[in-house]
Amino acid sequence: MKRIYFNIRQTARERMWDTVQKCNDLCEVLLPSRITKRSSVEVYTSHQTFRGKLLNTLKLWLSKHMINIQRVDLHVAKKADLVYMWGAFPKNYSGKYVIELDNPFVLAYYYPKNFWRNKEKIEGQLNEAYKIIFMSDTAKNHTIQIFGKWIEEKSYILYPYMDRNYVKRKESNKKKKEVNLCFVGLNSRLKGLPELLEAFHHTSFKNVNLYVVSPLNSEEKRKYTNDQRIKFLDPQPREVLINKLYPEMDVFIFPSLYESFGVVLLEALSFGMGVITTNVYATPEMVINNLNGRLLHHPFIRPSNLNGRDVINCVELRLEKFHDKYLSNNEFYYSLYRELKEAIYEAVESYDVWQKNSIELFEEKFSPDVWKYNMKKILEI
Image (cartoon, rainbow, N blue to C red; front, side, top):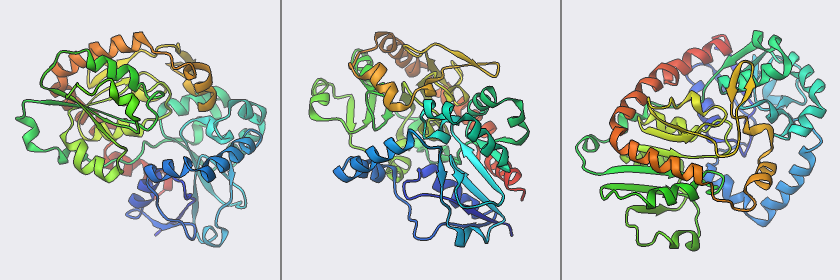
């Protein structure tokens, strides 16, 4: 059996751990020593502590000048046939490796200025990679636009692993009289929650609920205290969302203003939910307008051409710069509010059709079978 070393980190995203877990069925998985899985909520909470903020400040300063190179556990990695890297080049390893990218700027810690300054060095490192894996077709086209067609020869698209979660949907959902909409996001302003709350609050439905999973303070909730249709929940572990909340939901609403690949959208799709989201970077690969949901216009970014495709390229700015430029004044985007309100009315009428189409799209592009087929090609198993 082929031995693959996965250079997973302590702060790794849950989708990365999903890759590791599911690859146990395909190969012998090797991991760095003393690495344990942490949930996204745990990682987010640790970043909010004084120590976490201090470390982040130091890392941000360093990352403005360096390309993303990570040390591998050489004692373990030298036993592997292939090394799997996420968004970084191996620092102390000269063997065969593949590298997974959510967008090309991850190679410079998402700092575009740093990326362009080190473009030649990054291109040389990419040339040394055995294969380049992209989380989306958009990321692949973006990278080709920057470096040229030679990238395509070693490029593979591998969407994050996702179970067929639509089998968890409760039979009672098909006969219920209420429609459940939901939003899940840790950064409410960045994810378009202010516009969503206002849009839903100004609808007249009596049999429609909006579940909001986000770390809002009491002041942010106070305006909607008397709207019993809006249910506020604190951030929940992924296991709770997947096993308790999502099986009860009909439509997922995620009007995010900045996204590379919204894994939360793929989760919603896997549950057969209709989806309302903003057209940003790779989201059109998961939501087809008026087929399995609504794709909203971005309120202030216009499309740019990436390798022949029109894309809302929000990642041209690092997240902090994006926030400072567009969100620091806490502006309310009325165009997004109006589109959301319209989309909510459409969702209540069409959610069952959207759900059917989401399941079909999931099976066609994102199912466990499709993921397994693509991963086996990448790992040459």
